[in-house]
Length: 198
Image (tube, rainbow, N blue to C red):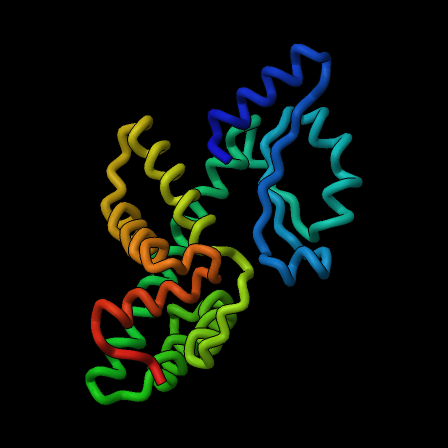
């Protein structure tokens, strides 16, 4: 949700004499199942302390980002970063294959270098195997990128890269792929380029 909506919920809760805590998470479906999520919390310090037992039941790390709204803002920025990482990986694999190089070699170099990422380790092989089990959908990423751009406009921060990447997700949605995992965004790029990973 947007930081603004989180603050609206906090205000509504306060009118009822209740503290409100926001705690967006990352770690995907696997992290939720294992209780190893990372929580990005926005809360007053006292409310944060009282909520700790709940956080410990679902996650292994809690980052207090600031007051309510801060957790949502960090989550949106994190998802924007993931979308650009995934876009770059997909484009790189398609280009290397078109140029005659096995995209697995590209992924091997990526994962053996300074731009290595656990995220690429998670998504790269899935893309190459065409395994798009939904952990986080294209529709949800599009929603978060739209919220990120709304926030950027409100704060007058230029974000041209995120705006461009959102259009790739919009293309995938237009192709009826919105419920699929964000890794399936590669199929929209394949359709544009005429190059299918194999």
